[in-house]
View 1 (spheres, helix red, strand yellow):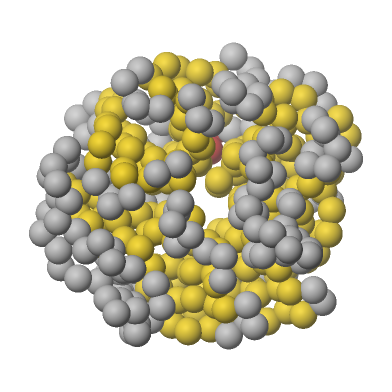
View 2 (cartoon, rainbow, N blue to C red; view 1 turned 135 degrees about the vertical axis):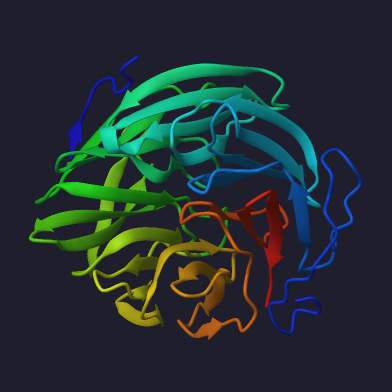
Length: 373
């Protein structure tokens, strides 16, 4: 580990998963969505790009959801209440093609729009009611998906990114979100992608105190390897990396979810042949589930008792949904999720009601739903 300097450059009844065809929810109107344990809402937002990317984050009583676009089909950020109704919206116009993450800092909200192929991220800052938008900063380096890390209480934060063979956790200002300083972790090979996840605020012996990270290294000749570890915030202003392990020797599009303890995680990956896998890890035990022999773009989120996984199956228009409990048992839903416009046009996020929400961009709507068993 090295310390660095400044980073900134400039179911209805819940017997099974069911998705109901609910009426559209106009912006700033009363929600007609189901308000039970498996709520669904369809919000017309106008046409979106077939390449649109989406990111979401929890706020105190709802969610912030952002997506990419152009001046003709504007990338926007909306604030949803607990019933998935839009209570505020800001249209950004022309923005970068990638959206790596969104974070609620209380007074401000940050959205990391980037040109990932060029290693550039433009950070935008919003007031909590989305009434004021400001360009915030430009960061150099390869940003993580879900790059905003924090300890469970939110009293320490870091921005996750990489360059060449080095992964970086930069300290973040708690109020405004400025990133600088922090720690560098050197790997053997070039890091091609990385992703992070925060542990939930849980209690009891062994409760998670770290953020989880997964990174993919290029081994050459088309081969790749992904590894996982924990970013710890036990030393003030100096994030550390610990409990690292190799997840897979054939790995792409890796995403991670932290479980109830620091040694419980699920990593979802794609292989070179297109298989989608879920890697359940607890203590010294590892269970690998093949979700699809021909799929892509899996996402994963822990809700306090189980891990939810959503992915795209080649040849299937709608999203597939599954869950893994804390024993490592997999249950795949026979009901499909919505049809999305792209591989990064959906996200999973933990909500204030201790559930997992799926947010997805369909061609002309934002679809929001609570996943339940």
